[in-house]
Length: 235
Ligand code: ADP
Image 1 (cartoon, protein in one colour):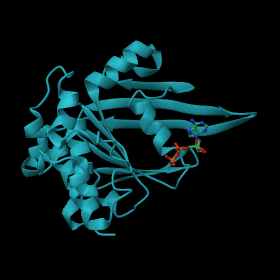
Image 2 (spheres, rainbow, N blue to C red; image 1 turned 180 degrees about the horizontal axis):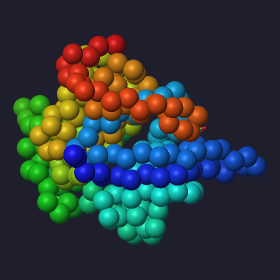
Image 3 (cartoon, rainbow, N blue to C red; image 1 turned 90 degrees about the horizontal axis):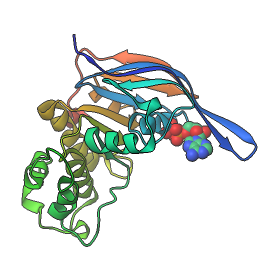
Image 4 (cartoon, rainbow, N blue to C red; image 1 turned 90 degrees about the vertical axis):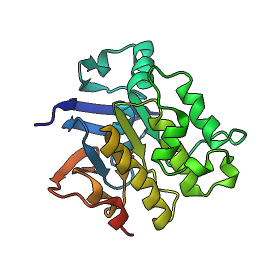
């Protein structure tokens, strides 16, 4: 039995927007297992990003509890949340946010310089298949290659959790698949728990489990006995 990385119970998030309350999450109950590849599926506005941001310590719940191993994220002050993010979490967003004036290697090194037990930046780029492009600047790389640099940057500090918000949202299908293969490889080789947001049902097939969000709640959780390799996906 795999152990549990996150216990989430009664998780609620209400945003105050002017005079109206927006109920972004309505009592989420979920356990996320160590080393699991979890896909969050659902339409725009269903609460996926809010949930991911709370998992990553970028936002706080309004009610309910979220426990990572023995850390109660809801009880942490800002400093503790910063340390939690720094020590445990790697993020990949839809837009790569690389620094244009730095090479791929330098973009990754920026993170490893402040990490406790980092990989060598060269090794992180090798995992995502970019060893031979490491001295290139972002503008000299394709969108998919830039996103793979962003994945290398996220995992170079050896995070326990890799959180990806629409990592292929800006990419065409073949390019997006190279990014998903990089995430798959990291999950397999480093045993990093990976949570991937997508609204693309085809990508859901690469998850161990697929959590479908609807209107701030979980509509369905589907398990895959045999998840599909990213290389076999198409959309
Ligand atoms: P998804 O990722 O599934 O598209 P989100 O988590 O981004 O959904 O959003 C869920 C709901 O919360 C939406 O109605 C959205 O408009 C609202 N929301 C998200 N962030 C904020 C915020 N900072 N302030 C106010 N409302 C927000």
